[in-house]
Length: 115
Image (cartoon, rainbow, N blue to C red):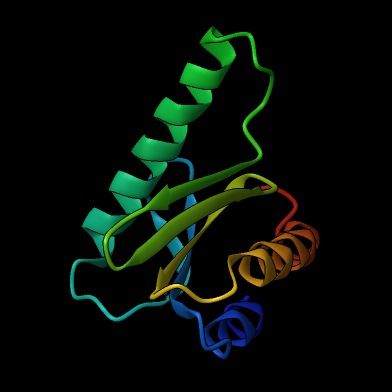
């Protein structure tokens, strides 16, 4: 798992990459923050809320979430029973980030079939 996350953070665009259980506990991560537990809990809550919202809007399952901020983006995607959370800085190639996240999620879902 750490190797997959390390490959993501090797990209110039990606600052943080963490793998969170839907219960909010961090499973693995490469993060530049001291508040890992808070970040994990908030990421799981946000992804859960967005998933509920899209279901309520009859728009099927949530696949990928992008939150744009002044300094970059926060992107989340399901990886089996886990959530991959990536933080970018600046205005890099977000298409490449999304593509690499999809690839990482496939690899992680095979490594951790059920959390």
